[in-house]
Length: 84
Figure 1 (tube, rainbow, N blue to C red):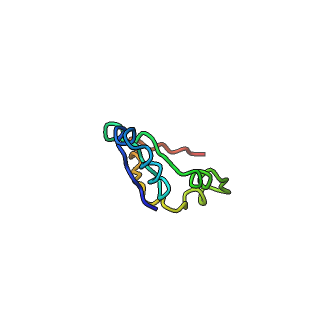
Figure 2 (figure 1 turned 120 degrees about the vertical axis):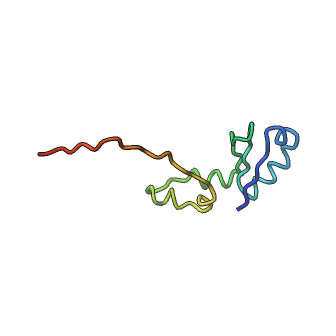
């Protein structure tokens, strides 16, 4: 699977090239250097839309490791203990 990126301007100039690229993998369309849209082939969309039986199946999708994700750190200022 290859991931292609188009700026909004490039996408508007050559939609057919973006559609062809979507047959090889997702096409990210950026606006001011930030991803705003994703173009997928209908086959890939239907595959992603399929029902997942649990969270582990959803997170183990092929190609998911190619996406960067860094959740924000949570700061715990104080820890309270409940005594029963």
